[in-house]
Image: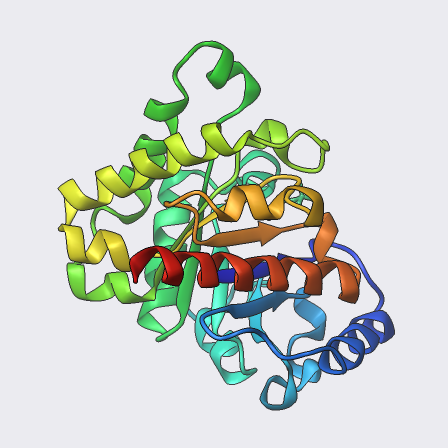
Length: 257
Ligand code: 13P
């Protein structure tokens, strides 16, 4: 299970450091649960990746290499700052910042070439869902974003399904809606690669995931954690999600005995 926080453009630098300190005072992640936090980019180097109680993530990366690209930061620069995971293809970047499918695929390649793990986001709009094209939409995003990757590269790929209509709206996909899309993604990965590769890729759900609904979502067999926005901003709330993931791991182990 992976519980990943995406702070988006929130928190001052001091608040970010205070969060890391407060989170480190809480019990460590349960066995089988990884935790990642993606603070705003200007804070990454100064977060001190080595002493953080979570993996350090970036919310973005350049689609190009080094050179005359004012304002851009490359995957290698992120790696040098201790970043381990990079979120690519978030709907807020696809819709508001020009990250089209081709650029998203370039970013995926840059992240993997730098030896980092990519958290590849996909998800449909409300209109897509109402028009019953949500499966097509998500599977097309996977096709253009990751199908070109060789099977060996897939160990550094996480997929996050984030229905746009559930992001920051308080509306959450039901466990049933999340599970059926995650099963479709797992099925697509099985066809594109094989069952072993598909099983090993963590599939995160994102969109108003919070302590009140996390147990139900994480209990879905194809939901392997969450990409958390609003509920990742406060240490004890985020920690409650980490504990929910721990319970899900425990339940899965019991079911497999
Ligand atoms: P919320 O949890 O605030 O809905 O945001 C989800 C998200 O976009 C995480 O990347």
